[in-house]
Length: 127
Length: 297
Image 1 (cartoon, rainbow over the protein chains, first blue to last red):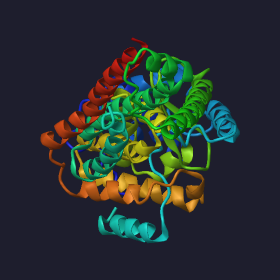
Image 2: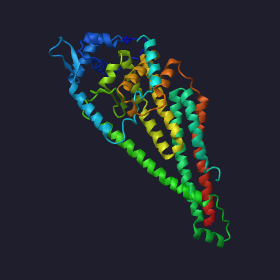
Image 3: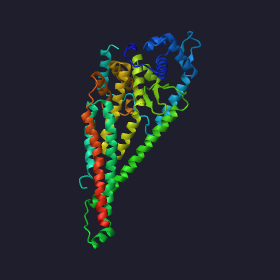
C-alpha cells in the first residue's frame, strides 16, 4: 500500500478535518503511533507541532490514549467509546427496515464480475 | 382540461427517462440540483391532478346535475366517473405511501441522532469498533462522519483522505436533503422512481468529484472506491446493503475519465419539464373551477 499522502494541489485542511485524519490514522493500524509516525503517515506537509497539538486535543476529548506500556510518546485510539458506538450502530440497524441503508453508503455491493475488474484496477495501479 | 389534467403523469415518465441520461452524461452536481426540484414539482403537480380528477366527481353529484338541468345550464362532464373513482383510490394510495416514507425518514433520523449522542463536541469523525467495513455521513449541526474501524484499516492513507472528503462533501452540500426530497417525491408519484435512483447515484458521483478535487488525485479516489467496495464485499455484507446496479463500477469508470461537461441546455430542459406539469395543473384547476361555477351558476 503506497502511502501517497502528499499530493501538492490538495485543498488546505481545516483543524477539524486534520483531527479526523489523525484519528483515522491511529485506527488504521494495530500498533500505537508516535507523532512523528503520524506526521509521516498522513503526509500533506504537516508540521510536527501541529500533529502534536491535534493529538493533545484528541487526548483531552478522550478519543486517544497515551500508550502506557509501549514506547514513550506513542498514542493509540480509545476503544471503549468506539465499541459503544458500534453497539448503537447495530441496534439502529436491527431496528426494523434498515435506516442506514437509506443513507448514502460510501460503497454498496458488488457482483463477482465487478469484483474481478476492481482487483485488476488495484493491481494495475501497483498500489 | 382534458389534456392538462393527465399531462403530469406523462411528464413524470419523460422526466424519469431524462434522469437516466443525465446521470450518465452530465456533471453530477448540476444534474442532481436540477433533477431534485423538477421531481418535487412534478410530484406535486401529479398529486394535484389526482385531486382535480377526484374533485370532478363533484360535477356528477345528482343534486348539482339536477339543479343545473332545471336552470337550463349546460351539463358538461369532462371526466368519466370511473376515472374520478380511480383518482380517489390513487389519492388514498399516495397518502399511505407518503405517510410510510415520512415515517421511515423520521426513524432513520432519530436512529442517527442516537448514534451521535454522547460524542465529544467538535469532533467530525466518529469511529465504530466493528469488523464490517462501513462509512456514512450523518447530517445535522454539526454533521458527523461515521466510519467503522474495519473500513479505516482497509484503506491506504491517501484513500482515507478520499473517504473523509467524500463524506464531508455529502454534509457540506446537504445531499441528505436532496435525497429526502426525491424520496418523498417518488413516494407520492411512483412514476418518478427512476429519478430518485438517478439522484441517489448522482450525489455519490458529486461527492466523489469533490473528494478527487480535495485530494488532488482522481486515481487515488478511484482506488479508494475500489478498495472499499472489495473489502465490503469480502465480509459478505454486500447483500445486506442496497444494491445499486453496477453503481460502484460506474463511479470508478467516471473517475478514470475526465470531468463531465455541464450540459446547461439539458439542465434547463429538465427544469422546464419540471415547471410544465405545475403550469398545466394550474391550467386544469382553472378549467375545473370554471366548470363547477358554471354548473352552480
